[in-house]
Amino acid sequence: MWTSLPDALRKLTPRHQLRNPVMFVVWVGSALVTMLAIADLASTSRRSRGDRSAVTGGTTVLSDRIVVRITSKPGETFVDRMIALVEGAARQKTPNEIALTILLSTLTIIFLLAVLALQPMAGYSGALQSVVVLTALLVCLIPTTIGTLLSAIGIAGMDRLVQRNVLAESGRAVEAAGDVDTLLLDKTGTITYGNRQGTELIPLGSSDVQALAEAARLSSLADETPEGRSIVTLCAERYGLSTHATQPGNMVDLDSDPTKLIDIVEIGKQLLITRGALTTFSIANDLAKYFAILPAMFVAIHPQLDALNIMRLATPTSAILSAVIFNALIIVALIPLALRGVRYHPTTAASLLRRNLLIYGLGGIVTPFIGIWLIDLLIRLIPGIG
Image (tube, rainbow, N blue to C red):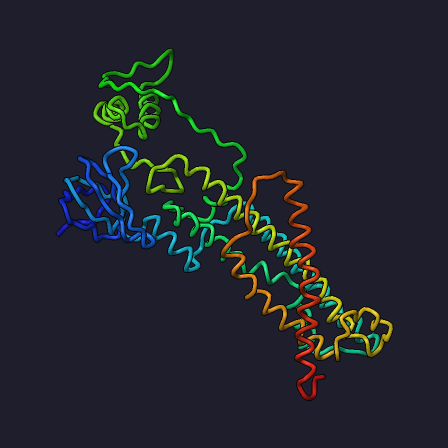
């Protein structure tokens, strides 16, 4: 029986499938493989030692023979981490997520204190409010909309990477890509082919040869030329550095296509823009709830507040109920947008801010007025409420 422990070697022949849920790298040889277990992708490519060496459980060898080395334990691959993220496992929050969490927590505390302070003032005026009304007000005021959609936005960003055959180990990786402003791609243009071999590393000055070997190995891991592979071999045999799979620390491109960096950066920026747009919408739509609930709570003792009832809601009961129903429905309505993402166009920050304020800021103000008014038209038909 084959072991699934890290560093174990396996020889694969045609029509052989890797069934263990672990990560492998090609150690010896080259073969044509297909990976059917990754998001239903029937991607066929050639894998060999070097840059295009990563294979996963579920890979089937179509031709030739290779020897692969296990690089992870079962349950500790990036696929398992992505599944754990989807299932709500604990993970480290990104800086932008931390900032947004602080903002939402601050707003929640402010609205909670405001609602708690409202009851003593209502009692002084002779219009004590029920717990149900105060709870409805709190639920409508706190930013529940964006708080509910944050996970969907992050998972959708990772899913868009999977559609491009790129696997991210966490939402932090996708978001970090969105912070990239300048992307440099190097192409030397060399077309000659030689078979030069590295034979010795010579440090300059007081440099340490072991540090030089580590740097040389890291710089040659992605180099599939004979020179690059010889340097990796030299560092392993003479300086005791074991080789490992070449992949970024938080993403794996199954096609090893450097041009995908542009797509990754675009997806990261789309994730950040989507989060910002929905945050703007979530905070803006609270304005309509003020005009729906606050006049309904105090219009009996302060008739002047009826002027704020610009939606002309039927009764205080229907106004509060309509606002609560809208607050629940708008979350469901925004889930498709959170999953699809806001369309990203390269533009300036000022232009992007104007677009967000116009579409999602103004839209977040107007939509609740229309939605609450339409719901109230239906609620008022219920006997005892309208």
